[in-house]
Length: 194
Image 1 (tube, rainbow, N blue to C red):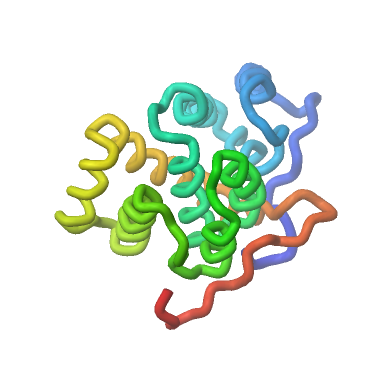
Image 2 (tube, rainbow, N blue to C red):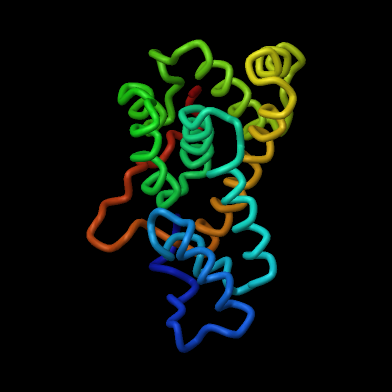
């Protein structure tokens, strides 16, 4: 993240429009970390924010993707985009879901984790290909489909896209971690093989 602070100010309850208020009420019921992060930016377009909340709730409560693999995909995306708040919010969730600390630490430094479980390797290869190349090869696709089946595979693809949208909002809005916390992600080495 470049620049000297957020580009969008925190909205106070008094500043909320009639179309923003129901979105805020719904967010307050469903998000873990309060209404910081991408939500102040999202609320500038309340109807779009409503749709994003629908998707967040789907991924959080209805998707059949295993939680550990969902959180792994989100951390991969957060690291690739250096979305500090996204990592800050999801790293504890990934640990709580059973993702091993050595895997989390390798990801944090932009390395391919050495100690991944077999299913995590499939998710990592798929997510990295999709994020970096915007496509996946037939062998990578086949492994992911064999592991997940069609429904969970489509959920994985769209989860990556949804959290890419969150990373865009965070990075363009210059949303960092909550005050009093250090950014968890170091800069990625440029030109180095990861």
